[in-house]
Length: 331
Ligand code: TYM
Image (spheres, rainbow, N blue to C red):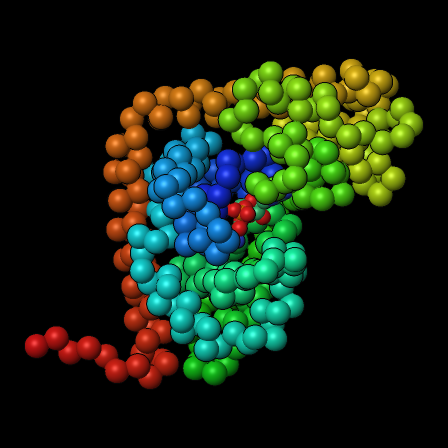
């Protein structure tokens, strides 16, 4: 069976971009693939973060993933820092990746821009991500559009590694959703929706109560004119809302456009908001149930870490062997 692997950072709340660009497909993929999903807490340390909150956020995000439909009986769900093989493989891949290719990463350029001090971890972030992926003999990596370049780097590193040391690592491929691969910020529809958005009204969190979702959509930036039409260049705000509607109702863009074409902006926004509230309702309800029993989530994460570690250790042993490291011989 083909294997999928993907990850999400526990920094900020899960927003609709994360859900539509990635997590929703993870849920579907666990039926058809050998699926492994990871809360990447080590990645969240690459920028300044609140120490008192990291562990709680990690657990909450795992709970949200389960509320979204990840079932630890059907996939492996675990926390990155619980499996030390990730950092060990990162070091080995650091000796394969080049400074030149890391410098070209747009996300590094964006996140480091204007910062007085940038951690070496932020620069090395894509190598840790490559290690995450390559450690599990991954075939496919379901991600949103913003991670395309990072998965490309993981491919390049795997190919170079195999060239240097012989066929060892599976070369992965990124996959993207047909709609909502890049959900935009509601207040700035030229930028992607992100956890670090300038305006809190620009980001729709999956746990936002219905009235908050509705309010944010009502205040979303629209475009001049009155026509509801999908045209990302001329009408980025309206097109983004159309994408959200299409994703939430499971219709294609063209059908969504045809359905909503006659509405004025006010009515259009109301229909988008209603569709999203309904779409997210089951997730909110399931989250409330799970939140009542946090120890169950911890138990599931421990089981996930054990399963992940078994797979990761075998791949890491293979890597250690081909790279010429001296094996241990316990007495
Ligand atoms: P992260 O935590 O920023 O985002 C998690 C997933 O959500 C997708 N995403 C979006 N999709 C559509 N529109 C948006 N506005 C949007 N914002 C985020 C991301 O593309 C991602 O799929 N580096 C990764 C985490 C990671 C990872 C990995 C992913 C670490 N190791 C190995 C895959 C495989 C990240 O920061 O995602």
